[in-house]
Each structure stands twice: as C-alpha cells, then as structure tokens.
Length: 121
Image (cartoon, rainbow, N blue to C red; front, side):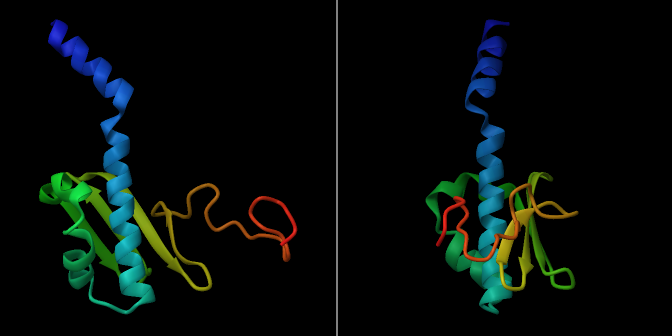
C-alpha cells in the first residue's frame, strides 16, 4: 500500500502525462511542417526527423499519427490517448490546437506594427 501511495505522489508531482503530451505535440508540429510547408512525405519526415530523437525513443512503440490532407492537419496520439493536433494555416504555418480549433493564444491576430509583447516593432 505504501508503494502505491508513493507512486501516486510521484505521478502527481512529475506529471508524466505532460511529458507525453509534449512528445505528441512535437511529432504533430514536425510532421505538419514537413508535409504541408515543405511538401515531403510524412513517413520520410518521421523516419528522418522524429525517429532519431533520443527523447522520443521511449514513446515510439505506441506513437501513432494520421495526416489529414483534406483539413491540412496532423493528429498524433500515444497509446490512443494524449492527442495533439497541428493544423496548417496559410500565412501562419502549422499551429497546435485541437480538432475543433486552435489552442487559446494560438492564431491570435496581432495589431499591425505591434509585437506579441505589446510593444511597437
């Protein structure tokens, strides 16, 4: 019982789910840029850019991605969960979000002449 409690505390403190979500987001963003910005094959991008990354080695066995060319997006999951979606938007490139739209803060339009920090550029 003590071991289970210790594992629960570690999982709560270190949040491995967040690390997995960062991994799926990285894969979605990389594949989206490779396919929709550079015009490369998704499997080629995966094998040349993602597979060699040491930080993602532990996730590869259960990592799945799907390229939706009609909606210009890449959906990546790990073990069927921790979904990340990168969508190509003309003039913005690939942005992370959900199946229904961009994440809060992604895709915001900046006022002409202003940077994202709110200062004049």
